[in-house]
Amino acid sequence: MAKILISAKHGTDNPTLATLPYIAAKAAKAQGHDPVIWLWDEATALARPGAADPIVGVNIKPLKEVLAEVTEMRIPIWVCKGCAVARGVQADNMIPNAEIKEMPDFIQALAESDKNVEF
Image (cartoon, rainbow, N blue to C red):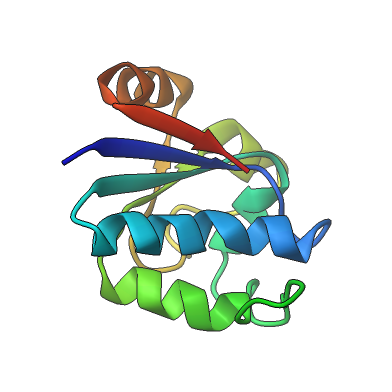
């Protein structure tokens, strides 16, 4: 199956686009693919525990529920270091499955991916 890199850049600025990367990752994993979610820009703020709780997009499940399913499926969530630092996200206080990564990690994952999806 395919390795899929899912890039997410939205947070509270756009609840629907903030949620869609997690829905896409769930669908990919359920189909047997190997997804990784890469958070940058405003999406990195959602790596803080509880930050996703109030986010509800248009005609989709609340992000809190989708994130719980992503966590249960053990889908990796990579958080851009520079973006996280700019938003006060601490490596030792993040949601499950999340870890700080840097741009070389993103480029390597992109080079090794079969597909890249951006939200």
